[in-house]
Length: 67
Image 1 (cartoon, helix red, strand yellow):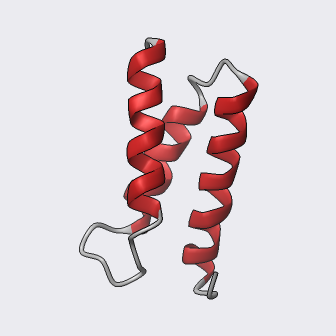
Image 2 (cartoon, one colour; image 1 turned 90 degrees about the vertical axis):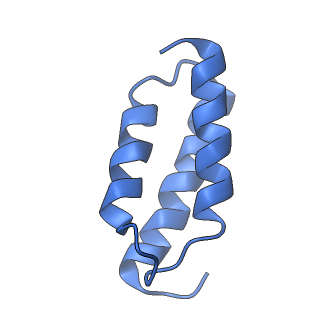
């Protein structure tokens, strides 16, 4: 995955994860797989930090806790 596509994917995930809930029609497992795929392509510390925040936010949703 090239740098520009990775940035676009991370930005998209940041937007989506901040707006979804456990009741959305797309299951959280789909977003978990998307984050995991992006995580494998991360090369820069700033990207890794952003993906770590995405993981944490999705984990909260998966556990059913309030953020």
